Length: 465
Image (cartoon, rainbow, N blue to C red; front, side, top):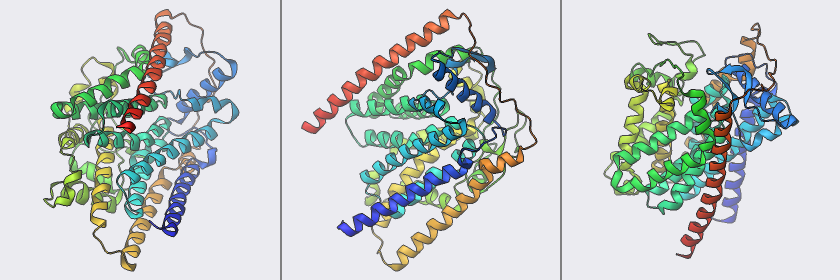
């Protein structure tokens, strides 16, 4: 790559990053939020409690309100306990939501650049991945309705990259530690559901490929569990014995197809007899062009006999991807939620599982798309068609984002009355729970120190080798 081409690439990547960052600032109305729509009032309480606790130097073990059936605040696995929360006393909750999302989006962009470098992606294939990954219906709709903990989704590029590296034969000890640290970062963000889905994928890869992938997958899960102990152990106090009602999976494959290609508002859709949920639980919007990328390059070319695709078939992922997809469109998970295990019972919206196979298929599609593009002559027609396709895709995502944007949802909820009073931390004797918080935190800190040391050691050994 000559100097001029490298400079142009850097400029285009910087523009992509800046446009994406501005999208999220605009999406959250520059931090000016009423916290009335959907789950935003709960998020306001979470962050306000944290802000007050940091300012006063107290531990918010309990609060006067009960969320998800528990007033043990530090046991709620969806509460954000990342280092960023120490910025809360310096700004409004709305500003923090914007800043935190942009920070995690930025981390995800770095992860995407690592993917670009490893698989030598061109700007066209990288831009397609960038648009579909960052602005699909799942992440936009969930963030729009007040699931701010979903911002941990932007850490998925690291998880997917490290998983593929292990399948490609990277040193398994270092790879397992890197995967475990990604799970740890997700747990800090309060991305409990995403953490569970990622662990489920690792366990499925382990189950279907025990001989080849048993050690790295098992090590990733065990080490991730140690790192995340400070979230998982207290969560048992909030989730144990809690009655959860299974909501639904996609009723049919056609409903999933509809969710992939249709832009809809937040109205409830076809969720009987177990309950109702808004379209944000369905939404997977990637548009017709995004779906074409997944179908052609993610599915069809997986089974192409052409030798150029041999290096990136990843047959180990076939059954795990099929299984997670079936869990999201079948009723089998309804049975699993009746097993008295807190983590299984907490995953009562099986439709959400679909984002993991979708994100993984997107990455595999992008890698195979790049393989095809390397054989295409680069001329005016190529660049015009690539630019036109990306612009049309971007405009469709912009339409979708507008429907779920905070300013629009705030206008719809203008007449809604919400109590945004900040509850003070409650003083309550609960010695076992407090001991669990302290003990699990000690386990996580010890695991962080030990695994960081081992990672540096294994990396140095790999460089010498």
